[in-house]
Length: 162
Image: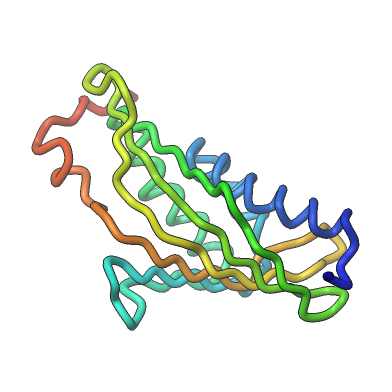
């Protein structure tokens, strides 16, 4: 049994859901609001034992959404992050470790009739309770799969609509 309240557990699950929806929707401020000012995200791709990429701080997280999620949106690529199972381990009344399974799909508008699963793995996160609610302090992403649009769709990309 966890010494964490059911309300806190539900808030942490909501934080994880908001991560998926804000990234998939290229919601820059919504995404950044999920993290503390000094949060760090590290990405370990395809079995890497050292991080392939590290993003530190809210401004860098904002830029990641603008660059990557914005690029996807602009070319007509719909992403969906599915995080069906999470285990929360309370570390103190105001901090916890969270491990979430993940499956990510891509669907190119006007190309795909159904989404294509492209990545699977898990997220290992540290969260803390702040005056504004639960926030990520760190998020380590361990995914296997395809990460470059070209590898799935070749050079086929919709023109950028301004």
